[in-house]
Length: 224
Image (cartoon, rainbow, N blue to C red; front, top):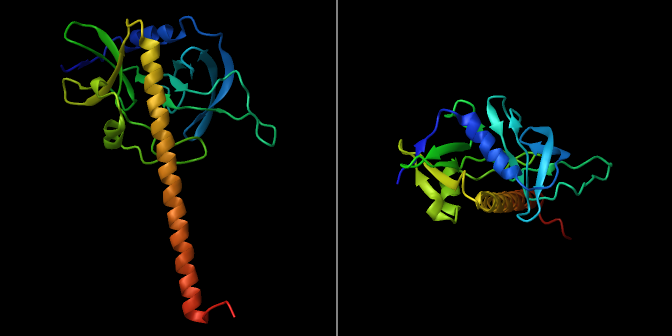
C-alpha cells in the first residue's frame, strides 16, 4: 500500500503530533541542544517510561520554515559540565521536522493511507557532516534503509519516495513507536561514529608506516 504525502494543514498535524508527545510527560526544563553547526536552546520534555527527550517549536535548527522536533536519549534533568565548568549541551539523536509547506528537504513528513488515516513518517535523510556539534558522516539514504530493522515500517509514497511510516497520529502507542525510531537512529549514528573512528585510525597508521618507510629509505635504520 502506497501512502499519499500531505501538503496541506501540515502545521495542524505537527501540532497534533507534538501534543501527543507531550501528553503525560514531565514538566519541561530549559536546555542547550547540539545542532549541526550551532547550539540551540529550547524547553525539553522527558518521557521517563520511554527514556527519550524531545523539544518542539516553529523554526529552530537549520531554518525558520519548519516545525522543529529534535529528540534524544539522555535524561535532560541531569546537567553535565565540561572541565571548564560550562554546560554540555544535549545530543540530538534524531529530528522529525516537517515543513510548513509540506514538501521540503526536512526529514519528517505526514502521509495518509487510502482510508484517510494520518501518519507521521521520516525520509531517512540524516545529517552527514562530522563536526563538534554532533553531526555524523556515513549514513546515506541507502545505508539508512538497509540498516533500519523494522522493515514492516518501510513504505513508499504514491510518487515513489521510500519512507519510514513511524506511527498513526491517533495510535495509542505513538510515543513508544517514536521512541523505537529514535533508538534505532541513535544506534545507526553510534555505528557510523565507530566506522569514522576506525577509518581515521587506519589512515593514521598507514601514514605513520609510510613516513617510517621514507625515513628508513633515506637515512637507513635509526636503530644502531
